[in-house]
Length: 605
Image: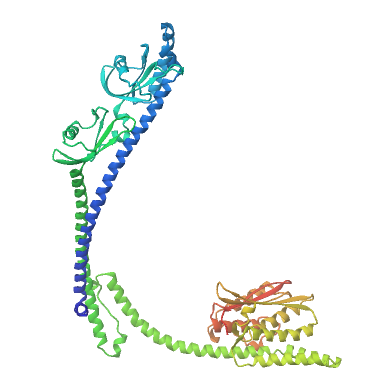
């Protein structure tokens, strides 16, 4: 196996494709041959099933027609006028009823065009019909079996009507008087039916030469069908319900079916040799056409693939020349005359090769730019962090806290002074802590220390509510991103409000996006819409380096009454850590309140 693979690998691509194409062609021919045989068997079976379905349909139509004419003859037999007409004794009564019976028979015939004639004949020789020779009908009265109380068939009859000698199927049934004490028939109803229509539309519409059908009456006389095939059938030695016979050098398969309730038979003949010949001719033409199309496509394929191989050879020759050259070859590009390029793939190979060389140059430049950007980003992050830390040591906050401690000392509130001093030292120790990332719980503890001091300052001017899920307390976040937002809410929102306010701090995990959501909401004075739009624009502005930032501001020089100082610091750090798609979201309405939201990827410490 390995030896065969090595021999194949050492061959040119052109030889490999030719070998593969040859194997594929042989496989396709084998598959087509197998498909031809399978398809032939399937089509033969389908045709046989279709013939059986047609036979079943004809038998069903005959059965339906039998039921229909049974009901029709019953309605006539027990009609009031027919009963009175058949039992009338006097000529006057007979004459009076004749017109009513005649109208009834005419109307009944008009309901179905397959009815040639309808006649009623009494045992007392009272008789009426629609058309035709009544003498033919009268002669059949004695042929009705006495024990047969339902519709019976009297075979085919020659029926004279309008100077024509028509072949019809004659049906009849006894008419019994409505007087139950008399069990003897008083007459009979005869219905002459067109044979072709009686045996159904499926029989009439069958013009296929793949199915011959013969209808026989109870005595074995042929009603409809090919007389010559039937004569050949009756001359066979063995009488069986199914088998085969030959006629005019054609082999037929036949089956015999009994027609229920009528006593007739139907014999179907399927010409096997004609069926086989037609199927073979149809399928052979299809597969020959397929082979022809395959041959044409193969020639076209070989022509174009050969030109493609020539183009590939030209390209490989040029690449070998570049590979054997010096470093200056990296600056060279492939230049092939367009007349040598045979197809789109060859053009794409040429374009891709030149693009690859250009990408190598661009990659070298990008590596240098990447290191430069990284250095600038780290430098900017350090500057941002230092500016942020300077902004955290808010002189006003420190001054107000020290003033609060002095006031408490005059009142002798030693324990409160101790608590505030410890909280203040906790905040300052935390702010200079070396780690860049902390848990949400650590950040939350600093916020509580800060809020404890502010609560003492404002003496209940606002209520604090916490809504942080326990599962997110171990979430990993950048240090000092929550406390500036809380300070912003108090200084620029609640402190400026004249009414009692509320501060809400919450956090949860969004499992759909796997993000940590932190929000700070205050019911302070809010932000005017024009100022809010300016803040949002600054927060969503993408700044790659300090030189590209059109908001060039030194954070510790921004006036304190501008409430975007802490927001910008936090927003810039979030972008540096997680990318430009993450930033602060702020919603505010004047005299109602402000909501600031942080969304960052959820990570655990």
